[in-house]
Image (tube, rainbow, N blue to C red; front, side, top):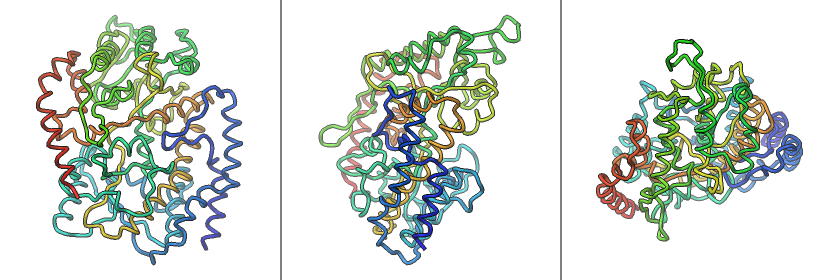
Length: 497
């Protein structure tokens, strides 16, 4: 029975084109110099991957395990259930990839993947899932095997002793490409790993920020080749600010700047700002040689970064900045903005029916001296945690590893290669740009503990939303309190089992 399904998987692999320049963990990148041959390279590599049947090979070490039909229970919010579970194939490539992944894992391990859904009452209800897990642990109940939580909600229950360390779980190998290395290294503290980030969490890709540009407007305003600008290492926040200034037009002719006009740049001042320091290669918190956290945000680079963001947002008359996230998306989708910085998921929904063609670039660098293009993801991507009441370590480890292996081989290619690259972008150059973007995903420990650290990871957001740029004086007022709370936080981790 397994053999028949493996044959089905290989056929699906051919249809999806799995195995092109997939960049799931940020450790491998397409060669930017090979832009002109990107499509040919994808075809050749894809054929090789199908022949080798890499996904099945990677699962081979787990294929001798048999869990007798046991349930592998995964807690998730209903709004993110699409990355965990699909009830049936429906012809939609991403849905069907989830279905194929789960079926492969179930047959390999003889398990039944079972979602434990928390229904949220509103879009802003991100707390109920953690509350359900916490109550079950406090009651000694075996509620689920793992939980896929929003990253910004994971820190508090960890220090409250709700979750086990991944270090004691067999079959999990964080050195493998289906785990996101930069994330797992950033979130490891005091030599322990209380959450894990891998390709099972396709939200990590969907929530990653990049730069979208309107091709018609860029051409109309004689903006130089943006793809070559990126490859030359010259795509910076200052250049975005400069180019955006050319893109304003008073479309309704009323002589006033209003939301019905055309803009060089549009964005929102909340989540956009959360990812910018990571994109500018400035950490909020770093780990020392002993794996203990230290605040490193207070630098001249941060001061300058805030000033650059402020200039783009509030001093550029061709920018239209909104206070509520998503309000900027219709402006770009309707062809009235040259640039927007937002997350990739909008290619799948908000921009999928755009009349104008668009391209995707990495997030701009701080300056040309910055070596790599970096980015970050919105703080609502999934991380994996194990409740302390979940005791079947063999099942947890094997099933989690298998789901990440199969996600790497089936799900990510469906989203990343077939849908995003082939369906929602209109040129081969954007394919290389997306690879650069994904390669540069950057992570910071602070995002786990905004609640414990006086909203430190959101300091840029709060400054820019308040139309302020005095980082130094703002941080000076909170520095002592942050340092004390970080010390308490560190001690809490050190006291965990």
